[in-house]
Length: 152
Image 1 (cartoon, rainbow, N blue to C red):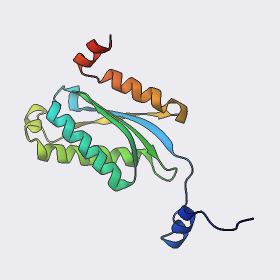
Image 2 (cartoon, one colour):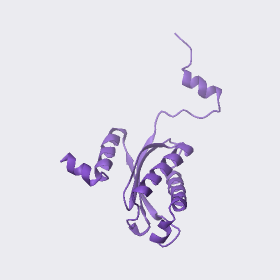
Image 3 (cartoon, helix red, strand yellow):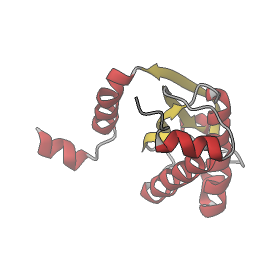
Image 4 (cartoon, rainbow, N blue to C red):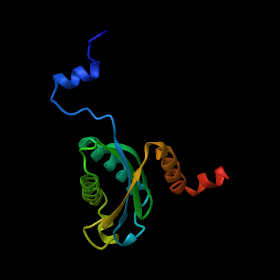
């Protein structure tokens, strides 16, 4: 019987100790613009997707997918059991809102203030077996009209 440790276990033991997680909890988080105003244009969507990806990477969240419409955002992410979904949402919404206003100051005028996001959000747990179906549903929901016409 070989008593060698797997390379990833050996690395984890030699570095800073953190528990190894074999499971992740998947969440579909949805939030909207303030007043559900349809102010997010293509340039805002691209910036927002990049900001959410960047914040997720920096905080150690596993971002599965992010879809943005004119008035709301869907983020499908996986968290370790030690990570709080409320903290993740606060980080993603707060950071993306501030940086989005800095990059696109016209949003202040369109939303009549300094807040981009509504204070409410919705969280739905997603089982591992349903992740692909949820991604497909989001892509179908947020597909450009020309892609929908080509698919039919």
